[in-house]
Length: 241
Picture 1 (cartoon, rainbow, N blue to C red):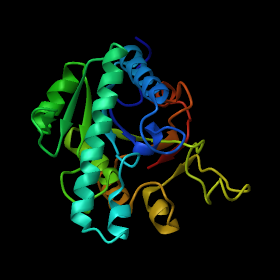
Picture 2 (cartoon, rainbow, N blue to C red):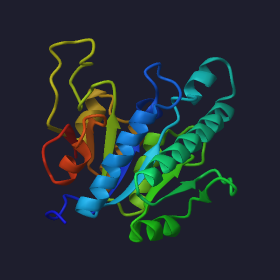
Picture 3 (tube, helix red, strand yellow):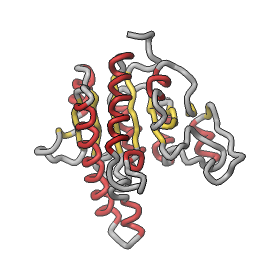
């Protein structure tokens, strides 16, 4: 095993779009395989406990449904089901990569996944399994960013790693896709993220992380080796904290 990692237990936050095909929808098997191998490698080499909170935007976004006149709570529940679909796909990829995993969902569906119970999640982590936390918080009106922050606090994780996609490798002072002069922050405080209105996580999640003193690392998920590099303490992406 390598030197002691920066954190011994983390939550990896993935958006549904990060797992999508180039069209932005469905699932890209190559991306699933890559993510699974990165996670397994980090577990094997560094012994870090890893929980994954996954979004569902590649199948359904509650905010889109609400914008089309759908009841927002109903639309959000549909989004929770989408996260379970992604969770099951991730579990399959992890198991094929040789990493034991469990899907725990806040929306109970016993024939598909285990219900989310805090101590059960912790026990799975202690046994070396990767825990995939689906179903968001189980409540409408809250994003999977907030779910990641809440679950991190519940399972005593020491940091959140937020994987981005589309080539964005951290937090910038402007949208790097639109502004070529945008500058990436190496480190920034939670409060600065809030006051500058930077799109890292939603305000509820950032505020919660600030109150709980939970650092967030924003990084390019699809750059191979990034997860292990972050856990070794190397400067990758942007550290919020």
